[in-house]
Amino acid sequence: MEAKTEAETTAVKPTSTPAKPLMTKLTFFKLRDSFLQIQKLKDVVKNISKLLIKVSIYPTKDECYGAVEGYLILNYASFFSNFTEDDWIAYYNENIHKQLTKQVQSIRGTLSSKSMEAIFSIFRFRLPPINTNAGPSEVAKWKRKPEVKDSSVIDRVLQGGNSNAELAYVLVTCSTILNPHHDEIMLKKNIMKQKVKKFLEKINNQTAIKYSDFEDNSYEEEEGGNETEDDEEDDV
Image (tube, rainbow, N blue to C red; front, side, top):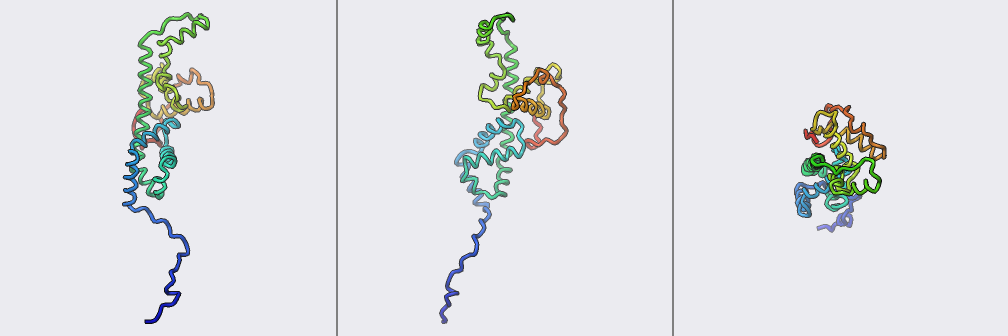
């Protein structure tokens, strides 16, 4: 038998680094299961929704997607890095997006309910009387009374630490419910979105919100083009 030449016995090194293979279904499901063991997915979604609502009361699909990516990169980088782009998109659409939008809708609904409860609670009792010509010390004393302090709708609903987006939403909710020129008490999403956008711009720009802004009834329902929450027909 002839001896093999050196060229035949020497291993040939690859000229370039082989491409990273696509994630197999088995690896994908193992990653999913390991992530669910670290922390339940619904808890992660809940944390993201609480952060997202402080930035956007009516988040777009892109805002939802970006918020989830950012949160996972910061808190679960090793898990997130194992996804290919296609695998991540599929995982997000299948396991996260609907849960996230429902959670955001739930938080928004809670803000609306708290606003309504505060309004009806406040107007069920009388504030203690005070003379309109009372001096500063007497006014300050009157404002410190529990029944007067409790009459602030904003404080009762948000209880401090709120974002500008949340503040705008509560202001719009109250103005919609109490607006004497508005013949409905239902909070319609398309109209609410327009009002929140206007109020938020004023708050961010530190522009005074006038009484006329609260009574403005010129908003109209938009036809189609709803870019949030999978076209769900919620009214808040």
